[in-house]
Amino acid sequence: MEWKMAWSYLPVNYNSCIARISNTTFRGFFVNNLKGDKIRIRFSNLYSPEQLILDKVTIAKRTKNSSNIEGFQTIRYKGRDTISVGSGEQFYSDEIDFSISSSEDIVISIFINEPTKLYSLCSTWSAKSWYTRYGLDGNFTLEGEFPETDNYELYPALQYDENRANHIYGISGIEVFTESDVKTLALFGDSITHMSYYRDALTHMMTDAYPGKLTIVNRGLGGNRLLNDYTRMSEIPGGGTIFGRAGIDRFIYDIYQMDIPDYVVVLIGINDFTHPYFFNRSGEIITIEEYKEGILKLIDTAHTKGSKILIGTVLPFKKEELIWFDKAESLRQEANRWIREQEESDGVIDFDLAIRDKYTSEIMDDSCHLGDGIHPNEEGGLRMAKAVPLELIMER
Image 1 (spheres, rainbow, N blue to C red):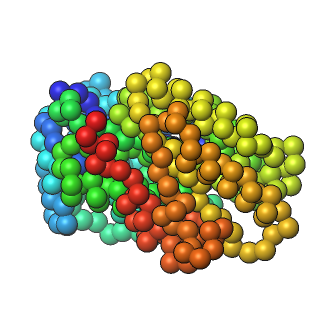
Image 2: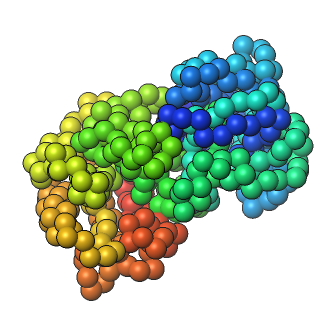
């Protein structure tokens, strides 16, 4: 028996206060594919300069496709109901006896009473494998239902993003004590991974085909680049810190801080190819050799840690005529040729082939993106998920 992540996402560093809340209940619903009799929560207050006080945290469950929530239990830390998480801290709750099966989803409720500033969040745009609801003016952590409020009433600073997301604060992982042979698949990349459209489609496929045998963690970070730290953007909260450190620098911590996944899927590069042109940073234009070196570094790290690693081809991104497009597209094509031909990784996932237009390889199929030509929608995510060799992952 081992602790395995039933759910885990990266907290995003806004580097500024994005919301002020009080007397509010957060509730998260998480699709679960594990079975066990013990559970624990990973609390997180990364990127906040202030202490976080969680006045009440509960866990419950519900049968898949049911609205009935049952089995409420209080989550504690060192025996205390009120949980204090210091600035920059992450730690696990006390473990509790909690029977869960792969046919049951997990429900976490958090009540914050005193006025609290929020500086980071875990986020999903697809919101199919997990989503959140909020109750204002009360502690509803032990109640099956409560009056709900709109996500963005809490986060007015995030309305710059035309693609609306679901967010949760104060936690970054849920672990179940389960069978040791359960496999973990970690997804690493940029917004295409972070937004979760292909992750959520994979989750649906996983729960149907391999109940109790496979779990997926998301390590995507919107705007992330393989070779350079975040692109500075004054028009968004924090000036761009949400895009994070360079992928080659964050890989070992973000993938291996909590466990060693059996497989890692890497899909990254589009921002390396486009940001230097789009944001007029000519000094950050990369070469194909630099890109190869970065990917090979990730492969070497994964193998050293004991994981197998699959490299995904970079998706097309053309939506409109741009004077620099041919230069960035040439680099993408070179990168994809190399990815398909290299033998250093444990396999290739041809996301590009799965989602590109049938007649024009430099654009995404119009049914597969959110309207910007770059980010996959539900249909795009499904096509990408179908390209992931789950059978291969489960055989090894």
